[in-house]
Length: 285
Image (cartoon, rainbow, N blue to C red; front, side, top):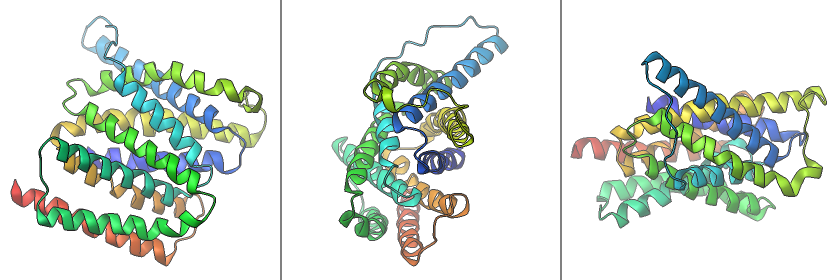
């Protein structure tokens, strides 16, 4: 289950980068289409699930903290990918997620062992090694936005731990994020593409945004909320460091990006660090 969620996360990076690469769709438009598509898909799944169980539809009223974090992540994620490659963006995002979740874990009073610290240091060194050249380029704004997106996603992940109904909870989060996404597009109305039939390139961007929302976001995040029931905060954080590796491979295979020596070395360092942390956790268990 965790593997499916991680593949979905990587898919989001690839789909977003492909949709925004030609500048035919605005990041605000992409965010709104993505969240709306995810909300519609999840609402239908919850409705069908209740229908199959013979239950009446219940109002999805589960607070606003998670929807706000979901919106913040999705919006910053979209704007950041204007200037970042697929693999680099995913590395920044989940590096930020990992750091945030480690801090949350420490605030809860859980200390890391020496091997866990070594593994995290190794994994993060892989992120720094890959991202460092980008800091001297104009993408520093993208770096900052993606880092904040990672903090929002870490908060969303923590809020989802212990979810008793992952599908309904995720549906509620997506539905409540739509008004926020609608407000986001208001300053960019003169730049938005209303019709998906304006051109073949626009239709392709819309299809990518809908796929990102309905499949890799809506379904992927519901699966992630379900997987979180079997993961503690440290495990949830470190596992997500696999996403940049998957996204980088997707960027090379699908988006036509280059496979560089730096990316290979960074991936090896990150995977090695994850292996150390997960092995340490398993032995402790």
